[in-house]
Length: 226
Image 1 (tube, one colour):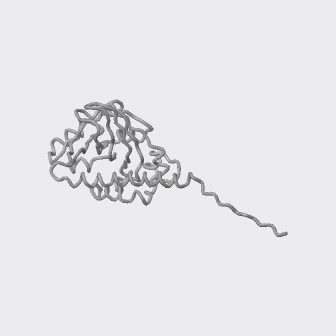
Image 2 (cartoon, helix red, strand yellow; image 1 turned 45 degrees about the vertical axis):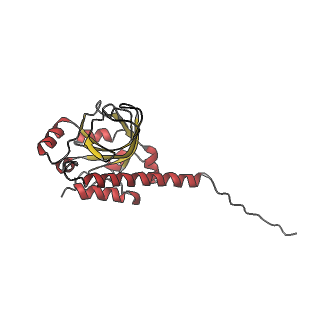
Image 3 (cartoon, helix red, strand yellow; image 1 turned 180 degrees about the vertical axis):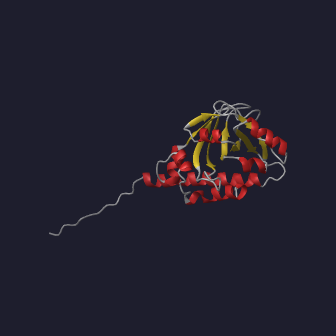
């Protein structure tokens, strides 16, 4: 009697879920790229070009969610990049989360895009740590907008990190006091396909994956150093 061997292939449920999570990380990075492009196209009331040129790192958190009325909890996930050691070009992005803190006088319930400029090496070192508090371990201030060079100069002297927000079409500097920024290891693993720390991504000149090319290209477009 001939033996019949039945080969059964079972699809493991975790694989599609992993792919779906990867897609969400890529979509979030694309959203951060869109925010950066849209903010930089605001001519008269955008981020002063001088500040962007002097920034050591840039953080973009799209669709940060806030709850409550006037003051409440906030939560967002985004990405950041820092300049290469030779100041030419920007690093591959690292993933980051923000939690808590006060956005000031705002009605809750709406999504807010957040942009942060890290203005010196001390601030950059804090950003590369596992977690730190805005306004605590790192001085933070609402960033100036527009073409006011004097305001831009004063701001860089007073804070390590300048913060901006965009909500319902309005863009302005805003003070993010008491919020925490911490590494998003899950998103890094999704984006790079392995466990990797933000510090290793930035300081080891890790190549940007395909999903991050447009983000780095936007940074080089708006703030490269020749």
